[in-house]
Each structure stands twice: as C-alpha cells, then as structure tokens.
Amino acid sequence: MAEEPVYAPDQLKPGNRKSWRRGAIISAAVLLLMLWGNHEGNTENLWLILLAAGLLVALLADIVLRRNGLKPNDQ
Image 1 (spheres, helix red, strand yellow):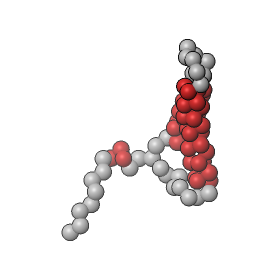
Image 2 (cartoon, rainbow, N blue to C red):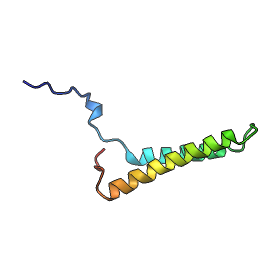
Image 3 (cartoon, one colour):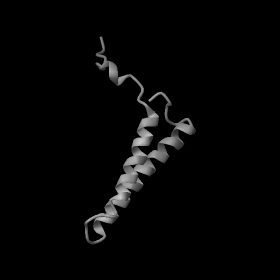
C-alpha cells in the first residue's frame, strides 16, 4: 500500500488570481513610490527598482504562461 500525501482542505482550493495580480501591481507601485524618501545614494533606489521589476516580470510571466496553456488556470 503506497502512502498518499495528506492535504489540508484549503490547499486544494484555487486562489483568487485577480487579487494576487492586483497585490503585485500595488506592491510594485509602493516600492517605486519609496524612491522619493529620506535616503541618500542610489543603492536603495537600485534595490527598489529591481524588486518592483521582479514583481512585474513574475506577473507578466504568469500571464503569458497561462495564455499559452503552459500553466493550469485552476491554480
């Protein structure tokens, strides 16, 4: 008898994709708004821009993969 993995009921429910997308866009916007702050130098600016760009790249990759059928739409 093979052991089957145990799942909690909420692990099998699909998430709300629209709210995750909105959250990524809002988070990227907040990160970019932090460029105008109380800091000196460009190291912080570089990190803020890279993190915001990473969020947007992940969002675009998710959209493209779902549109091309390479990622299931139910998750």
